[in-house]
Length: 252
Ligand SMILES: NC(=O)c1ccc[n+]([C@@H]2O[C@H](COP(=O)([O-])OP(=O)(O)OC[C@H]3O[C@@H](n4cnc5c(N)ncnc54)[C@H](O)[C@@H]3O)[C@@H](O)[C@H]2O)c1
Image (tube, rainbow, N blue to C red; front, side):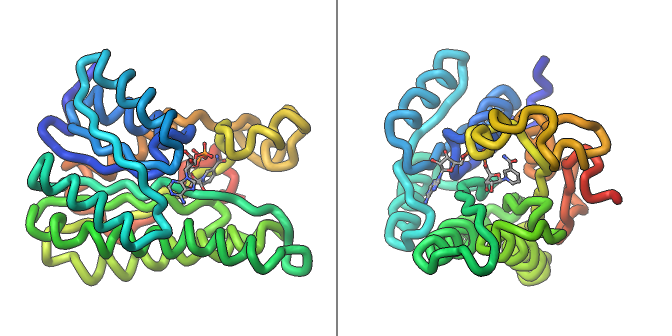
């Protein structure tokens, strides 16, 4: 069923070929959005764009490492040339590093911060002129439950996702009167390639699933639905908010 909730809107999604990114891209396409798919995974990008076009959607792909300011400028130039406007930016690209404080390597720390935290800022910085000119735009940044509570591990990832949460709030305040809403989504344990190794290893006994009141991992589509709400006009009075989608994990 499609309700065309993004009819005519142009949406740029980073990390578009990942579990959550692809589910979001496919949902947005079904809801009428014209898509700019961005990722470092070139072949997967082409396959996703084909899939979306075969089902009647419209998608352009750009190879983009979100930690590169220059590549962001190129991506936004593509958006400007192809569509002349931008309604929605979904910053979904992300990487994880699991070790805690003492075992985190400096290079891993830097890369996680560069992609997750700096990449989110660079994306907003590059896209903001088009979003402001649009006057009714929405940015959805992807944080995590690990941007809300401590886990005792994943030091760099936690730091980056905590930063995404507050970066979203300050941007929401900065652009509130310029027609750009900014919110963050906080997924819990979601079955995607990012955590597949852990899910395979531990199955249903995975501690985070055991601690999740719903006793299961979420599906990427369940995060995409939250992205859709924040991207579209139904959330027109929602800015600076954090939408937690975690099966109750952080409720206790
Ligand atoms: N899966 C979970 O349990 C979970 C939980 C909370 C938050 N998240 C967040 O959701 C987002 C999507 O994660 P996912 O679960 O779909 O993981 P995923 O690994 O399936 O997807 C991540 C995508 O980001 C892309 N990417 C990585 N580095 C990039 C870079 N430098 N530039 C551009 N693209 C890059 C990858 O190619 C991949 O397509 C991430 O920000 C992640 O931190 C995931």
